[in-house]
Length: 257
Image (cartoon, rainbow, N blue to C red; front, side, top):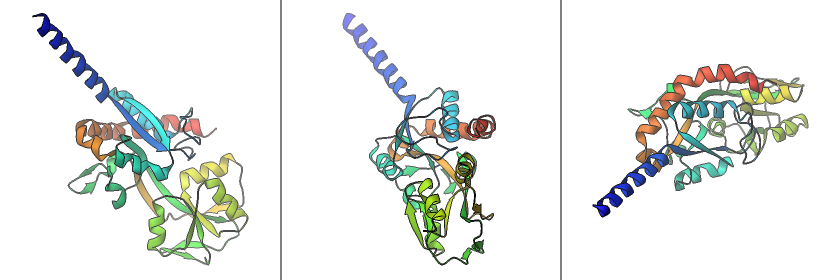
């Protein structure tokens, strides 16, 4: 009986530990500042952390999941997903290459737009006196390379439309290149660029009103994590869809200061 009791307690403790572990998840987001989406450079989680981190935090809280946040260069994140070093990452639009190593919310081969983390537009920015226009998938009056952030999915669209480009590691660097006329324009996510220009009182730059792309961006999971935690991952996506707009409405004011 004594041996049986010890064995029983061992099973209880082991199962309890497994249950606790199942309720923790390691999620990664890029280590560059993309305020108001994700705030601050480096590997620290800032306060406030960024509107997308707020959404993930709120969804996890409602599901009683403990999130361990890590930050890595965007170029390293998909390798970490592939190796199972992290359980998931955000925020990323869909590409076939990314889907080879990560799980997106897909049903019957269709990407579920309603389960997105956020929707973002990419617009061109140029100097105020520039004659460049974005019209019918053509960058009219442009004869030079335009800037784009390294690793961003919009690069695929630039290639598709045969628009010459050069990559930069930061938004600040692209803006300096534009002001110094080293590039004729740059493309960026409008919510990030508009926020940066406003906070830094930068004038003389205009946004072309028609986006080059408007895409949904998602919380994604590693193949291994999703295979072992499919129900929990699906619940996470569902919860994000339920609280997303409420969190954006309530928290966005924290990033307008």
